[in-house]
Every structure is written in C-alpha cells, then in structure tokens.
Image (cartoon, rainbow, N blue to C red; front, side, top):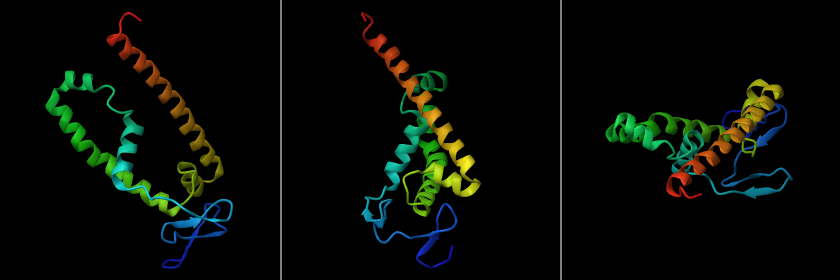
Length: 148
C-alpha cells in the first residue's frame, strides 16, 4: 500500500484497487457504482441488533437488577462496546469496499482457509440465532394468546 496515493492493496495482495472517489468505486462487473454511505447511528443500531437480537430479555434484566441498572446498562454499553466496534467496522469497510465483509477482512489477514472458516461460522451463527427468535416469538404469543 502506498501512503497518500490513490491505491490500496487488494485482498489477494497483488492487484491494487482504486480508493473511493467521492461515493463511487469500481464494482465487480468493472463499472463504477454509487452507494449511499452508512452513517454512525444506523451502524451502531445494526451492531446492537446483531449482538443482542433487540429488546428480548429486557424483562428478565429488569427483574434481576432493577430498572435503574438495566437503563444504565442500555445507556453505557453502546458507548463502551458498540461505538468502538462501529468505528472498527467503518474503518475496515472503507479499506475493503466490497460486499463480503468479515470474510474479506479475515482472508486478507490470515488467508483463504480462515476466511472460509469465518464465513462458515458466521453463517452457522446466523442460522442458529435466527431460529431462536421464532421460538421466543412463539413463547411470547402464547403468553398473550393462551387459547392457541
């Protein structure tokens, strides 16, 4: 990578890729594309829902620690955890302007084997995590509609 130039190293460390030109960069088919950038607040919200699945489990937290501790946790945790993670994600996403995300980052750092492992484990995590939400929704619906 040359500092201050318009080139960055690609994930295969061979072919240089041009840096973002405003909001345009080269797409996979060779054309120059245009995308709307992701700002900080939506990125923090996305990370919150990716990590916690949203507000499910809030009742247990309030019952265990009380409303003050629960509100403090929901206020402080995003600043301590989600904001730094959002900044790292934004830095890596601008360094590797492609759609593969984690896989591109891990492949560039550790090689194609570990990049594949990251993609596979992320997929397995998503499958198991998303299947839990259906069970939680059914349990909540059973509380509100016991006749079913």
